[in-house]
Length: 436
Image (cartoon, rainbow, N blue to C red; front, side, top):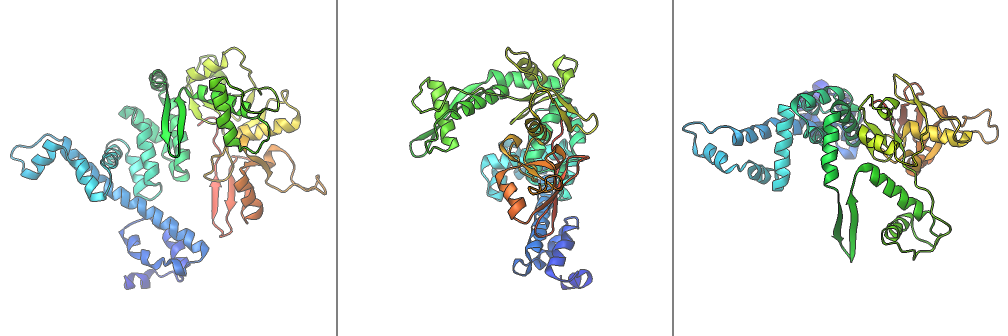
């Protein structure tokens, strides 16, 4: 260990952390981890060290995969003639999950899940497994890919992996999940429609007991119906008087009112209209394509679902123009709202979520913030209130930008925002496009 440090010693603990962050995880890197002493690292060094350990954790998880897959294969393989006692017992009783559960201190269900994910990575998703071994993605992200592809045949799984693997290292798990859902709907539209129809037949209500005399009540319904229900609840809650209740409390009360038909809560006026937004290409509307549509607040839905809503009585259509190559929104319909409202709608449709990396707060629930600060004393000299200079930020990340020392710049060619933390580390947020 000391000889290795003398040969490779970059210098301070912070320099070690930065150096190891650039290395592929391996047994050699693991040997060097003791130099990452938290008490000797600066705030920036701690971030680098954290990233090193996370990459090593992915590498260790990848090392477990062939072992888990091998254990699982033994239970499903044909029992060889003259097999020894241990092999016979493993085969006859299929105790692989129990053995793994005990060894790793997991529940039986947790162990079975580990075995299933490992088998899928080895047999069906080799590129995803390679990224895990390189520390480029986390175990959670690899499992997200496995879970999404579980309903697909091997050929479609390979096509989906080819389509998404290049983007996985730049994404968080929730971003990967959305990309996978849309990619699967695009590459397997008939299968997606069939699976949706089966799940639609299974719609039901749920009522789960909660502590302290409470209960969780809801319904499993098609996504577009859930969006309509949510908007109806929000619209009704907006009519309630300002009597000290939180918005969450008003929503719960509004749901009760709407279901039971009661009106026991004070209101300030009549019921507001509910608005559900679905973005769908024109060729999908006319039936020339089965590409997925996008339900605001949910994600990809099938072309059939989109057409059902689009041609329902009372539906209002509004136009969005997207760039044919990047898929970014470049223009919203200028005839529907006055300029300030149209600019807001443009930015919300373009970015869809808070522009901070990893944040998924819907854009319509955020503040629009000027990337280049607006000059209130001389508006002509400061950042303009135009889409190119506006990004949606939730309250937390809005405050982080203005009071937390974080800096941000936006690349108008691809919509990416590049954030610089007070420690000097940089992070990139790439907004969802309408073509992925």
